[in-house]
Image 1 (cartoon, rainbow, N blue to C red):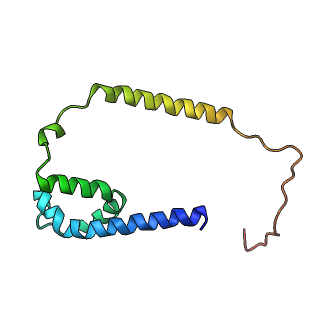
Image 2: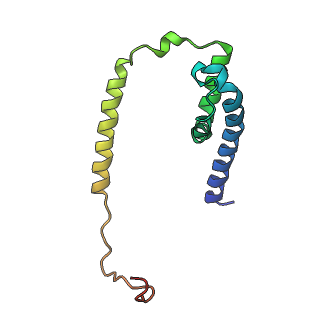
Image 3: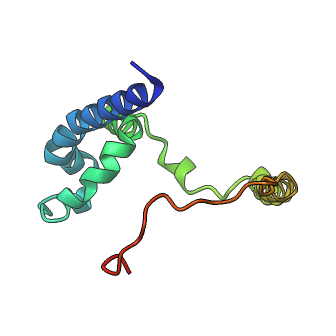
Length: 125
């Protein structure tokens, strides 16, 4: 198995695990943890792609809410002061990475002449 096959296999396993979580969550779980979702069945298929991608978070949140370990007061606290510092640091990091990428840009090799692989016909144009 080469690297590409391993990556595709892991993505496939992730999607199957997400499907295993999505089916019971969208049939049973969403009614139990969200009062506004009760009886609303039309929008649930729209949630399938999102649940497939973030199924560990969905499963964790579902367990926390089912066990009653959720501290709802913490959800509404304002962001920490470090969030602003982190946002500035990430913006600066993007600028630094782009600057370094432009400086490391490759140039066209000298003495290289491009060649046409096949003749184009009038139908291709």
